[in-house]
Length: 619
Image 1 (cartoon, rainbow, N blue to C red):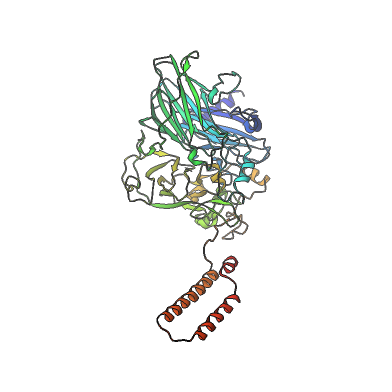
Image 2: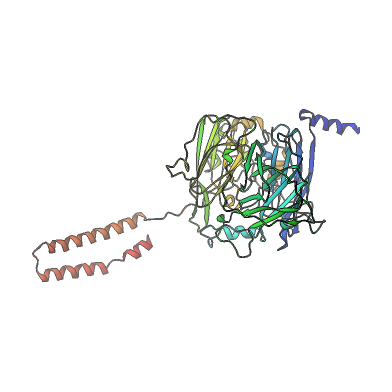
């Protein structure tokens, strides 16, 4: 009898010759003070924070039993993983699941062995703003053997940190009192490290995780280290460099690339890079590792915020640390120049979607985000359940709501993101890595250095899952629609997602109905929360979308029809008056008495009607 579980486990693992790696996560509130400035309630795991890092090998399957002990629904999204054939495990609330009800357990299977994926990823909540409050951790999938050679490796976690709860910050952000849409500015920046699946301890307290100035990386002379850098922020982009050391980029968002020298990295929210760093042979000095916030993204930089945080590379704990070296200028790292090791030629697009980014003050007085002038709202029925329950009607995009697109199986999809907003936006696609086939820093320009032409037939464009699109810039992204399911595309700045900067792709709906079989507990959890799991986006049959939340909508600024008529009348009257004056000047023969009588008549008529200003206000 004792052999039976072992035989079952062996049968489970045999196809990939890997292991079943199981994690039991109790998601709870705990208190933490990582920046040393303010202790606050955070979302932790198993009674501690930060949540434990996850490390796997390429042939493993990860199974996470997530028990929600919070007061609101939550999820876990394993960022960057494909979930081919299991779109319902993607962890995006309202898209791939209803959310884990308080007190319930959701088991996520992440089929690494059959995904063809390895590299640097992370896991975070995709519900109730819990990742802003701390539910986030790095995930490393080791290839066997690794493409690049090195002696040891560390994961470098960087991120922004807020002292206030997400719920309170969101109320301030999306409110009539913030019509300009100024995002909440973080209170601090954090750096911390992992090694072999464990967080490195503080230099001042061996019982605690080391953060920022209390975080150290131990280097040995002459060794080459791989640093896996993950930006887990809710808002902040970071510029990253190491004093006294050279970096060579070898991975971007899970894609191995040819070595590329870098003096500085820019990491927008959710991006990951791996770099090789060869240690110095001299141990007489220690060196600073820098992660500086891109404060251009902030409306204001509060007096109490230190946007530039450092940790220390230690050769000798008794040696002094060299003075920090600032950069003369920041710049965006040219990720489009990276060359993947595994070549995938660009394919010609068969389906193009243009997504225009815009923020505006809406009819309810709040500032919202929009793709193509439409702000995203969570559907009544989570998207995956609509796709799987609509039968032949599942190919009709309008049944999923106004921010939805249906993709045919094996379409070569090109998404062109055009950013009309004043801010930068990290755009993330679930379920795929895309090729970046074109970037522009000014899509209005005729200068090919700012807005080059899109070149077809590229041999091996860089592939990643999160791309930054600058203000007045654009990016063209291509992928093959070979993963049936419902997939989110959104800005990964949490405030912008909450404000509506998202769309959903319904990929190969009829094939998804044949391939995807969500476990029964998902339906049970939706039922427990009163969330329907069948029908269109509103939970109805046919085209009836009554009850589906839409809007708010952009204010209709400018002249209304009544105002235009009123202004036309005023202009016409003024024109006739000027013509009359001109006629007099040209010698028109009327008496002084007639002139006085005409002036008096016009004054009486003017005083009898409302002014143009009152009409403008009324209209």
